[in-house]
Image (tube, rainbow, N blue to C red):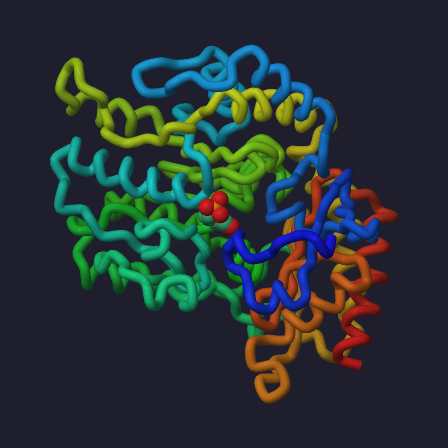
Length: 439
Ligand SMILES: Cc1ncc(COP(=O)(O)O)c(C=O)c1O
């Protein structure tokens, strides 16, 4: 690979200068494994970036993409539609939480969040409540990188220094290690953190608030499940105050929690739901916003006849290739039972395996839900000012394991196909890497 020129691609969220000195290249992927150009095998415990839920390089998806490209590479989605995309939308709705039976396609999670913000506001305008322009997000949230979604970011580094919307407030972080350390599944304590929502509503006025947006389980911010009762209370406050509830299921969607969506898993149904990533197994860029029918209908009823009901959308929204990949991905999801696999024995095995690390003295918390997991290391800001996660993650990669560092946390979201043997290998390599770095 010495001939490879690393100068021209500015990679996202990457320390590019560091990368150029020590490039980590991945060239091939299969099942739960990635392979470097020199043939080293790396166990992918992140499903790529929370997206390769089917395991990597599934032949049926590749074949469907090839077939679609040969038949029709592209068709315009503005004022036209391809049958494959309608078929995929219907398939998605079959698995969607009750009532969320309209899908607006996008190309990414960021665009899904942006789209949900715009649809939510169009809905408020359509029903004569155009003053409702404020959004409420939450500390530690990751919602994407467009200006709207950047404004909702609860991770300070992702928001500060960029021009952002001013009409956003933040709920407190749900992570409370002092109260909930080593919880299995949903933690017991913390639903009272939503008292802040009631205070914010009183302060800003419900008549000015469009929507609350939350990840039902925090993903990129450090994998934090909601305390028991939290989501139910959130739904009931939003209902009582006439505020829309948006779930950002870009990470939790498509089987991650043990149900097709976290909304179904927790029995709390939002008004809009943003998704992307694993929508087609993470193969072709695509996102989808699920919308309640009555929200669409209200917007349609208010729109002038003969005009688009919303002046919004992207060239590649619902692209035939992405939809074909999606239909093939859903054949696998359904046939292999992957959308609910995390709620079965493999989810229990995952939980027990993760919590077996509890004897490591540097670990102050272990959390899990479905096929999601996180560990938190005792902070050591003198030695590791940007968190303990990065050095451990670097060592993991050398030891053949891909996890994701988030400050002092390590987060995990393996392909939903992962086997018990692969989970054992993960624990072995992680334990070794922690010992290598922290002793
Ligand atoms: C919850 C959530 N929302 C939105 C996004 C943004 O998605 P994308 O990177 O596809 O724009 C992410 C990405 O990780 C995410 O985790």
